Image 1 (cartoon, helix red, strand yellow):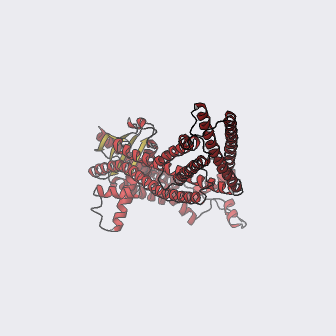
Image 2: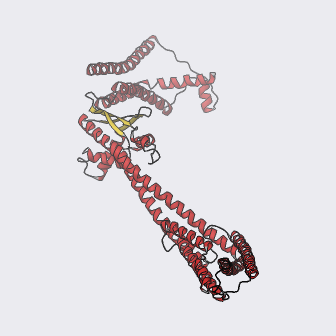
Length: 524
């Protein structure tokens, strides 16, 4: 620590030899900096305050129907990115600042100057924004702020409309893509069902369920056939026991055939026709479900015609019955027998049809799992594309409503609280602060000058310092005797140095005081 202090004292002693150089440089720097401060042009500030109201009565009412972005976040982001080069170029053109700029370099300099002079301050909690600009001419500053306010409002509206248009375009493109995918999936599903129309499930049941249903129908038909055969045999026995001797008219059996219906097939045909009506309400005639349902109805009608033909054959093969008997009971027994035979023939044909179907379904069980898996994959792809397509259509409508909502209510309500106004008194430069800085700079320049001179022309004030620098032995030291005249001269020199330094500081102090008085008069 003592060594450091000694070194500092040694440096100060060497700098003292060049004190007048430092005083001269300090005065020169002070005069130059003071003149520069006084010659700086005044700058006037124009400002405007805008309140952004992000609340709207329509938005709560349209909740769930329209997409409502975070308007407050959009406005905050807009305020942070408003001072960009495209906006500044537009602002320069609107404020006619480019009229004096002839070359490209001058235009670039104007844009850079305007960018640095613009400012926007916000209080995010209150949605208040202050737009300001500084210029040498107050009217120019006011004109720039007016243009700045217009750019601020137009940027918010334009960005929202561009976002809505971009979203609508993107959604329409996606809808077209999914329309193509949906048509392709429908084509694959249609081709699959046409290739496998015999085993394609229309009612959503798999092959095992259909096989079980066919087995149950076959068992029920066999049971009904046995019941009809038993009823026929019983009627024949009763008729034989009566010992009738006459024969009824052969047309009796034909009348019975006409009166016998096929209720099960008719019920199935009616059910399939109702199913066909429901499918036609949702799909076109070319849909695979519509085609398979119509084919099933046609098969059922063909089966009905076959059963009716079987009934006619049974009636024609029935034995002739005497017409001479007038016994009404016997005639009724004959009618019952004929009806029973017709019913047996009908049920026998039904059993044969169900047996053939059951055998075909049993043979198809070998390939059904693979076909059902392929059908499930096709149906799953079709369902996914259809769901995505419907979601995109719903979102397109939502985007359209959102665009209309923005047009009707606007993104936000921009209210001009304080119109653009330029101050009559300059707000810059702060000459008092600049003069104080100039004073410290001039003093620092003087001190730096003495330090540099002491390093360029060093001297030694004691033997220890000389030995430390040269590493040579010191043979002796000659002391200096100071006379009273030299002491008086050194004292006068010190007074002059102090006066010069104090005069420099006092000149700056007087200048700052004068500037403060002038500023107070302007404010008053």
